[in-house]
Length: 219
Image (cartoon, rainbow, N blue to C red; front, side, top):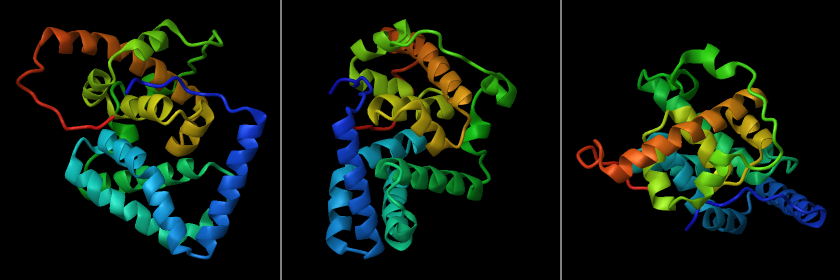
């Protein structure tokens, strides 16, 4: 599977998504068991992939995956259908990862990025409307290689790249999930892309990668 270009919904498609979200909200309020089964079947692969990229450990991701759906069942009435359902569950998943990290006395995702808060929160405006050369480069790369390299990047960059290119979320939706300003999301996206190319070259050259191993990620 290749890394997908984020898509833009047509007006009719957007309305269809709104109707689906509203139907999900109604079903969750009723605690409809059939709806929950359908949601798990629909989102299980994407959710596991996201958790894998955040934690880099399959056993941890699997535990958190179960907890996400427990939260969905218990707190389904909080979902009002105004936002995309996947944005809502990815927010739940991210919060669980942060909670787990804090329990293990680890830094939060925001604190773990390289360079500290100052270097990552400065305004980072994108001039061009279309994909940058780095984005175009990434679209052409082998997805398995990209997945491997993503696990070596700073967690904050890894998360934004995953949400943007695997989950096809808009920058605004990523800002909602990560609770970061839009300028910070842009910064993490483009700095993550900038870090991706040299790491891919290292992977292909076998520099320091063969001995280290990496977590298994299905893409």
